[in-house]
Length: 101
Image 1 (cartoon, rainbow, N blue to C red):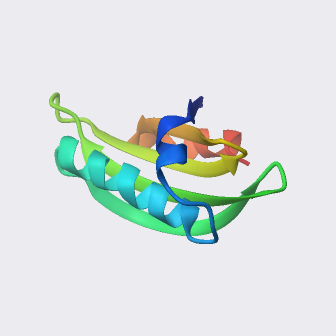
Image 2: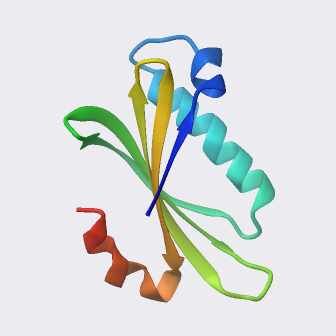
C-alpha cells in the first residue's frame, strides 16, 4: 500500500463536485497511455477517513509477462489530492485486498 500526494495537479483543476472524477480521468488516461495492455476494471464512489473518494481498479501487463492489478483511491484534501494505491500480481491481488478494508 503506497500513499502519495499531488499538489500541482490538484491546483490545476477547479474545485467542485466533479473534481475527483476529472482528476481520476486525467491520471487513469495517462496510465492507459503508458502501461501495456491496460484494462480499466471499474470505478466507484467511496469514503476514506470519512472523506469522499473515487476508487478505481485496473490491470495491465508488465514486460516480463506478469499481469498486475491495482486499486487506487483518490481523495481531495485541501490543496492536494491524496492517492492510496494497492498493487499486486493479478493472481495474488485478492489475498492483499483485506489491507484495503
